[in-house]
Image (cartoon, rainbow, N blue to C red; front, side, top):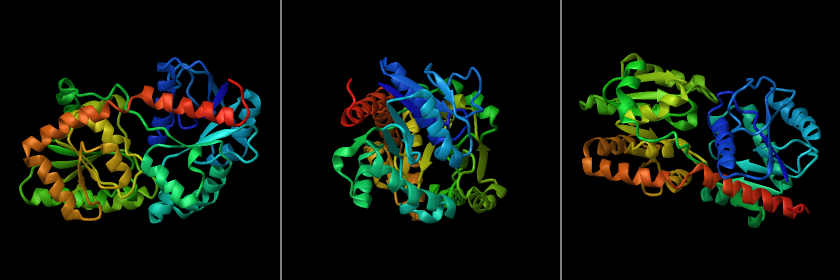
Length: 371
């Protein structure tokens, strides 16, 4: 079976989408996948880049999202002749081969005000159309599966739960803490957030909670790692006041190789998003031995698996109290450090790849293929 993976995010610094594709390819390589895999990448994919885990790449003709879906993917499929295509969210019209789709979240439905109207319309219109045509629907958590079943009423047997994964690169790195602290001029005590700057990440409430801690004498500064996403300017405006008074430091997009040391240096990792389909940074922090505070969102609660402290993301006091407990209760900190390390080990790239490969094979068989 030949499988084409829409890997347009590779090499773009596109955050979660790029991470998903990269780790899936890493996992497929790690388990010795015998299927013929080809990664469909952007036309400006860097020559010699080791991002496809050694699998061959095929450059599509368009970088634009709309042109890629409408024309680029179909042209690439005719050129590569796969038996199956794997896309995220949206498949091309009149797709020349069967396809599976990964549904990471449904933010355009659950938190519609946190994304631009154009993107909201595109996803509201095209995702249901894609799901109805898909040979298999991959979701990253059981929570996402329940949401999709409730929203779209599709047959349950068409869903595959294929969890995201943590790279082996994420591990405690106490030996690099001082170097990374100097490199980024970090304070000695800080609370860390890693992810996109967009409204649903709830950073204004997190910053307000950290500011309240500062008023009570806690020295911890909020450090934010990540670049602006949807409606990022709105978030930057909301954070500016906290930045001006020295209670917030923004690092922007940092080298991926520095993330484990940044997690290791943080007193707490805080991820109080209003809504998630998975929440991979929670596991990456756990893998580095950092205590985690996250929202009681269904997907985040599932991913955390009892190894993180939960809070109400819409209540600044709840966030503040959660941060205070993790900063002052050493026994609780140690417990979450130990349990977090164990929890993160469940989400290997190999497990992710095996789940995806099983879904590919079922989709291929359902469409009349013979393995």
